[in-house]
Length: 157
Image (cartoon, rainbow, N blue to C red):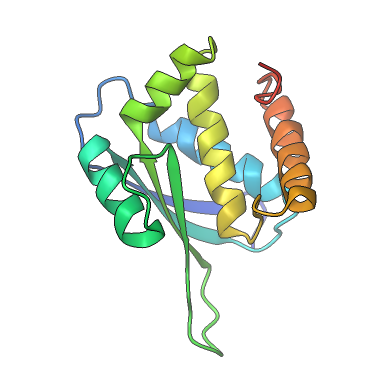
């Protein structure tokens, strides 16, 4: 990677109107913060799709067996052995769920968008929260990354 070259290439697509959705610049900033926070030094490429409730529910049902829309889904790249590409995967963020959760948690929507983006990127990098010890580690990393973005601890409600 050359000096000044971006750490991340982020492809955005929209399954809903873009009104009320953060700018592409914001998403890239959050992705790069997550990559840096996870100490990824190699370039990374990923796609983020902003979805509505119907698409979010379909994705969650088809890939996780859960019949409801969730805030963020991550689909890590499954590259064949020997294939060395910067592709790390895809993220789907459900805009209506993110907006609703931000309101319920009484936090700025932009902060919650940032959190869901960071959370999704960390999943692409192999972090998880199924086992308690892993959840504690992932949440601590999210909190540290978000603090670097001047966003308060999302787990302190």
